[in-house]
Image (cartoon, rainbow, N blue to C red; front, side, top):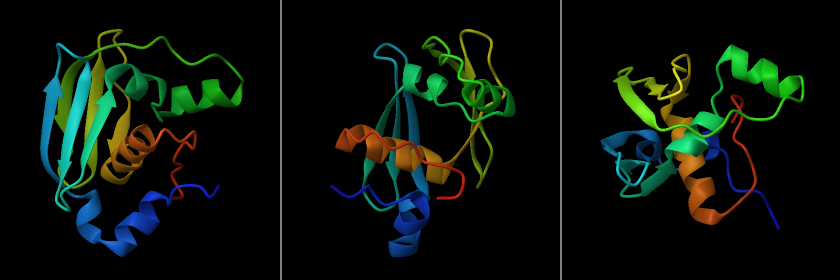
Length: 122
């Protein structure tokens, strides 16, 4: 079984794939919903977003083999224009920057049930 294409491959096929049209936080269900310009929709659980944070501290913890952080709900969403989102979580963590391509790849992973974690190089 082949791995899902990374964000770079998706963007090369259709540059609109990594441009959001709308971002909605469904706090009650604990999901961040992103509607993409190409018509796709990503449903991203808050807990997954927290556990997949790519800030320097979280990346270092992963390299050391530490367990992922406990899932946490979003408490604030800060838009970073064309770059992506800065997500703030209920556990106080606020350093994670989530590029649009990474959010799209996570959404595709969730929808496809794949185990691949997108990297910065995708």
